Image (spheres, each protein chain N blue to C red):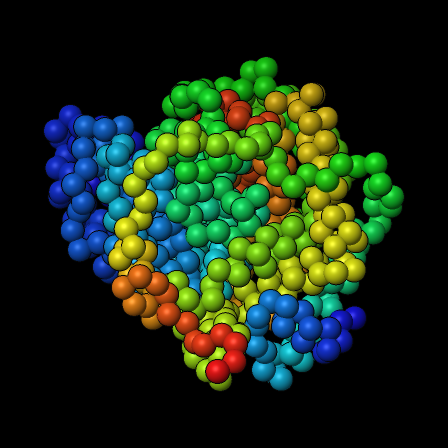
Length: 96
Length: 472
């Protein structure tokens, strides 16, 4: 069972603001999901099983290190909620 | 011209018997009349494409989460409302290059998280077989649009069943290729180790045409290998020598009787066509769904960190500082299911839980892969019902996440193993109401050509007729 405080902690880690109503709801729903997920304990000791993070047997597929054009700055900025000519604008970070 | 399959239409356009512009307009008008909420955008006019290409000018529906330059690409989310990407996904570029203009963007569950298309910020899509029911998901708009004949064909994405399950619930063909067959570049990410694009079509030949056009290595996606060979169009009419394994763990218990009946009947057809059909076992498969609901949300919690109100999409100011802008933007921009998965994934990756959850889920993924490897030593393919049930009523499962997740019970093991699976219509259940259900055939990695051939032979034998949902 996940407590309200645990949900609040996880939500903070994920930068999610939850209303009181959402907190109550997620505490109940997430507990059900986590209880169900806990059934993976039934498989017993898996110490000797290698984890699979990815099914493709490729590592470090790199292209040749040759310069080529990239996205123009104005296009990269075009969808931003707030920007000037060269960068994204965000609320002030840190003290005044 | 609506009765033509895409391959037939492409052939007629190439030979000059059908005018590409007229064909496009006929479908465009059908899209405009859509009352199933299949679309988030419909083209005003056709793009210029080379109609002499393999896709012959036949227009296509594209799931909203594929980035299309200058065309809204919102992934079913409020947080990307109105987003116009500065570039186009490789898969869509390849379709255009092969002669398919983009006709419409299709509705989906938000960021592809869902099995009913009810999680879209732009409203649910309805199932053309019964408008009180869901089309499945997450690619429900693509599936419903193809079934209703609003587009000749479409593409979607499948992370844990999001192509196969809606194809089954809408009575059409849906193919999830081998992981890495088609570039993920420009696909708005859900779970990157699982996401794979694929076709929705009326028949297996059309699916092969789209796969052939989209697959291939891409320097913009380091996990994309392509299939390593050209995709041959399917021709098989029998299954002599084909060995089909039926996993005990994914059949029988938990499958609705009406769906199981059509499944058993399809296995009988396979035997009549010359296949050997025998039981087999995927011992870890009953744990696949739980492992999936750790791995996919863990990747979600990381992938969706990019929605921070800075570079694109919604921004909500909050209390005026940066962190409160982040949290307020995400609170308003994401829907309930997306929040739920971010929370599950963040929890599973958090300090003290990582080994017991995410680490263990990755070990289960290894066991599932081994299960399939062992089965494919004895069998060419495994067969299961695509989904445990038929299309359900709108709202029936929205209050119970676990009931919704169970829709993908038969589809998720293949996703974790990275292997291809195709769903073909197995017929209608007895009813009432009589509704379509799917037969899933899955093969080893990169076995697409053989898989399409086998599916084609079965499709010819089943002779499923879906014209009734297109005639309006």
